[in-house]
Length: 471
Image (cartoon, rainbow, N blue to C red; front, side, top):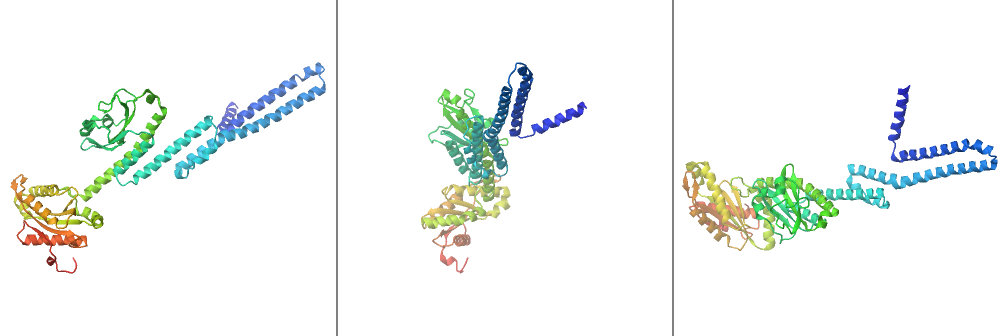
């Protein structure tokens, strides 16, 4: 019997506990009113006999009964009004929060924060709503920021966007460093003020930076002089946040803060730093993927032996490059270069020596033209050089300079010094042709003329070299 009663009580309690807050509070208030009403009736009828003995008139009894009846009605009215007030001030706001959380779980873009503007209370529920709105707004801002940086074209664009968001948090003085883990170096990729000093010691040895080395936030707000390399020690506080993904530090954001006691107590500033950390955490995986993509793109666009751009890269950029040449009204010099008797190097000295000659040739050619010019390994021992924005007729002079540079160069191989010459065919776009691939073909034809003419020559394309209608 006792077990049955215990089970019944347990089921009744479980039923009550699993009800909504509205019904639970209503039940408690209603139970309190019922107990109060029962005790009042019990007390009234208990003293009824004593009142009769004291010869209290029936009118007085009726009056007391009416008072109790009015009390009961008034209590029920208060219960109803209390239920309405509870629904309006407590249940509705909580239901809004639950509904918003459900929406956020499946479709965050549909959240309308304006629904909370109807709740004007400044009590604990009102404070909860304000904090919830702030949390949601931060969440949506972070989601929007993540979407934007995922669609940014380059890592530099991402750093620029991160910097703008940091400034939006009133963090106006900072430096963003990018870390090269393979070389253990770091370089500033964004400075909020170009006059900010940079400690060169950590530039050449990234492990000198405590935030990079530990992968943890380094802050002078928590400890005195945690970093020995900080440039403005004793002038400003600092808060250094590493850009970390997995166990790899991709960069460091060094934030400068006022050197005042108020800074240490500023809860609003601490919240901004936490939010800045959230933005940086969102940035890290995207930066890693962009950097990885750039490495892959670099690998697909560069020749692994000479580190020059390859033909695939040339095909990707050629249309855009020629459009710019035409728009500016300048000339593109085209030099098709081929090492003379290169096969004999492999035959006599081996392929290792041949690779050395190719790499050295690439280095000499690249160092003999401007950084704005483009040197491409076109295939085998053949190199294509594009001289951007030159004067008409200038390409042949530059080609002669390159020919002489290769002629006097000593290629040092494990089997001794090797000397080689180079033959170069020259054309110009759009002087020789309004079609870029035809102009490249013309340079190739001029190259073969140089080969046929004894090699170690520069030959400028002439129209009589090509008698076909189409290339």
